Length: 194
Image (cartoon, rainbow, N blue to C red; front, side, top):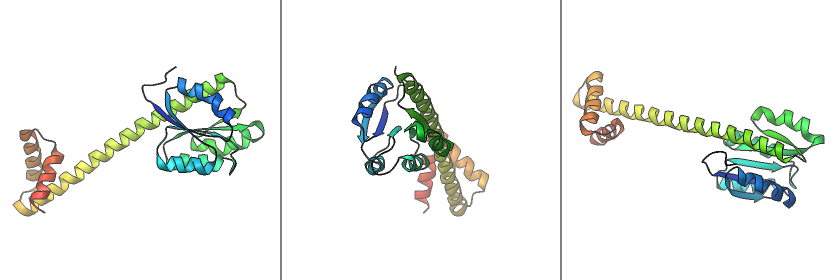
C-alpha cells in the first residue's frame, strides 16, 4: 500500500533488532525507501542532526534514556512525524505528556492492523506539515520579493527623483516589457544604484 508518491525517510530508534525487523515490512509498504536505524537516543540525535527524516519511530525504552525527551525535542525542533512505542505500564503517562506536541503513542506489543492505522495517521499528518512548510516558504519568498521591490523603489526615488507610484509603475512596466520577474528588475536597479 503506497501512501503517496513521496519517498519517505525513516529513522528507527530501537535497541531491539526484533522490533526493527517486525516494523520494516510495514514501513516499506508505506513507501518508506530510506530507512536508517539507531540503537540509542544519542545516535538517533546525531543522525537527525546530519540529515532530515519524515518519520522517527522510537521503541522505548532506549539504553541511554527512555525516549520521551528525545521525542519532545524532535517534535519541537523539526517537522518530523513521530511514533513512540511504549509498554502498557507507561502508556497513559507517556501519552498525556507527548500528545500535546503531536507525538503519537502506540501500545506495544501491537497488532499489525494498529501499526498500519498509526502509520496512516502519522503519514497524513506529515503530508499536512509538508504542505504547510511549502506554503510558509512561498509566503517568505513573496515577502522577500516585496522587500526587494521596495528597496528598488527607494533607489529610484532617491537617484531619479521619482514619486513612489512612478517608481512602482516603472518596475512593473519594465518587468512586463522584458518578460522578467519584478524581482530581477529590482535586483538590477539595486545593483545600478548602490
